[in-house]
Image (cartoon, rainbow, N blue to C red):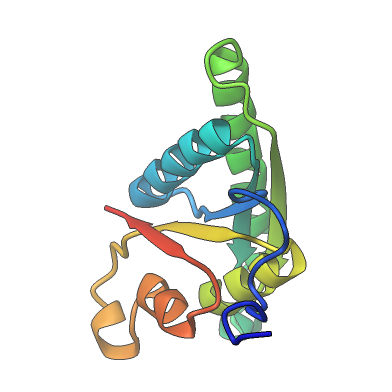
Amino acid sequence: MTDQQRHEFERGTDGPKVIVAGIDGSDSSMRAAAYAAGLARRQNAMLALVYVQPVMAAGAALGAPVGEVTGEVAEGLVHEIRESTERLKDIWNVRWEFHTFHGDPYNGLVASADELKADAVVVGASESAGHRFIGSVAVRLVKAGRWPVTVVP
């Protein structure tokens, strides 16, 4: 058996079965979700939309209702996704699931992609200037080298 035949990523299927799209409500993440939905439709794959709820201990220490706010964001995203899929159900016909994970976006997406056995990850390009110092989530996912990663502008 050659090294090529022992490649661990192959799961014995043609094409992706699960495509993870990271969403946070930003314009770029919603474009990434739309792009991922198109991929999932064409490949007959499951679209796993993932929202990572930030854990901000400092905000909680200052009395900010962080859990409530991020929970409301997740509910708003689910509502928006349901409306969109209902409006486009005759055109798209995409199987999808919504998942929430807790933590920072990078580790949350890694955990979700591992848990859901993702074949591909789709994220929006960073809209934050802070990524220049610590690296964007997209760049960190690409460097992890565990799944094909598509970054949507």
